[in-house]
Length: 440
Image 1 (cartoon, rainbow, N blue to C red):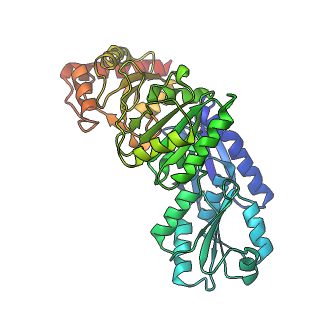
Image 2: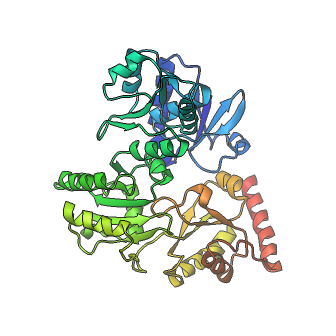
Image 3: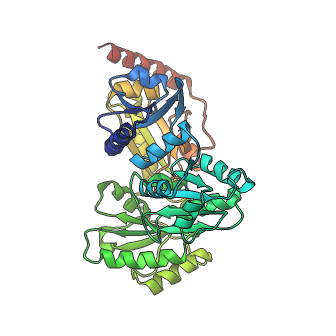
């Protein structure tokens, strides 16, 4: 069984809901014993606390009554693929050409291993890789009719079938874990991936950390032309640079424009970024989007010949951002607010780029997740301008301008600064006030 915990006000939960429902329906139609359920964590706080829910949506998989974290994607196909990997064999045995065709038709991306002997070393390695990749279905066969149906296939070989771009990629080298994993990572993604909640995990979780970004409105009259150019250049740099298109009409993508310091007057626009180098950004000297210019620009990027682009201090950047999660009735939160604003004004450039305050009005979530006190979090790297939860660094030191500044400038290395007796007394007073409020 898989269970999702959500909150009615959560945007990501709303985005997941239709895919989750679709996955449940498909599993039911297949006659699967896997069941999907959902819980409103705002109505069931004790259940959420039991499973250490710290964000929404959180998916938990139960096998034989034992919970384990969900590690798959957020589309219906990815959810189903992950669940089947956890409840069945790593690769489906394809016993006929008809079965193989149905397998390919049922999924946007599949991997099929052709082996004369499914007990060979190559086949064993193939199955090990299949077990390690949760979001793509794998099939394996030694049936001659299946091999003959695929005119281009040889044995042994591994073929990736997909419903986009060139439709088919064959891996005919010696089957090694590293080689096959890299082959799948590179070829299972479209040449140009549209950024969305569903694709973010693959974009940032993949092996390619150099990204080229096209910022454009999909409704623009020249969008198809610009996308065609972007696609042509992406083909030349497959495996070295990941090409991502970002629809600037999507409200949630506004924070990415802010992160790169792009104004609406500059659209459409191109940027490059290296995720492993503290989010180092690069900006073309020209706004020209032609195949020749973009190829030259990306080549210079690959060769390390471009100078990094630093966003102007006035831009709302989020490379290393300080986030405070507070409640409006909390005295400490009110005391902390001017300190955060001061840091946002005074510390610009270097590691720290901006400060923002996130407000959580529901005191049940506040009490459970933050123990009744404002929680300071340093978000370092991850999505374009926002870190995934596992990369956030909690701050448990004195909430002073000096303490927080030292924490930020150290990149989160200095996490504990001794609080004064006065601060500790204020903590106790604040806890009493919170207790009084909870009892109302």
